[in-house]
Length: 220
Image 1 (cartoon, rainbow, N blue to C red):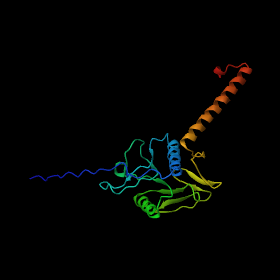
Image 2 (tube, rainbow, N blue to C red; image 1 turned 180 degrees about the vertical axis):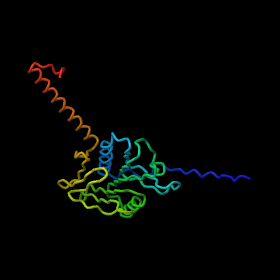
Image 3 (cartoon, one colour; image 1 turned 120 degrees about the horizontal axis):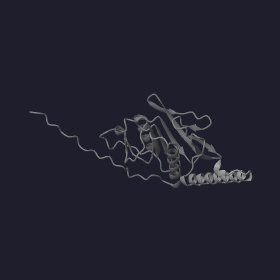
Image 4 (cartoon, rainbow, N blue to C red; image 1 turned 45 degrees about the vertical axis):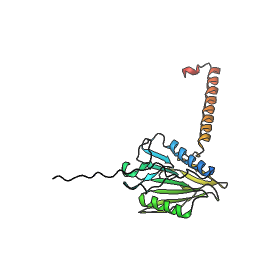
């Protein structure tokens, strides 16, 4: 008699933990600044996945073991839509860089639980961003099997992303690896429009100067 194969029970992995994305506008702004800034930085790299308020499931079959970082970056994983990030479906790659943005509703016990989760399952860098009271960042890097506090000469810089945090006149600022400040999506759009307008003005001035010299701008 052949052995009977018992199918594995289907496990449902919810795409939401029922928790709010942010507790206040400051926290939401910083989540958006980090998420969209990293999206823009890696927009041309098909193998960097950036997500915000997105559940990570590290162990197949366990839908209770999960965490939703405010923002994370997974290198070596393709862009694309996901309901959640299941590590076993992602080549065993746990997101290497994780950001949490502090709000007054966070509790020390809760933050310690998150820290242990990221440390146990493989984050290489972990940041807690404090936009207020007073503005600063706490950073950890993986050393062996543990996340250890990172020194911050001149600021807090992520080795993996090049993202840099500084406190400027008492306010927290973040900069991409190209040195440009990370801003709100609307501010980024405004800056792009200003750059485009400045480029148009330069082009018009050059065309006018060429005409003065008797040169057809379209022939240049």
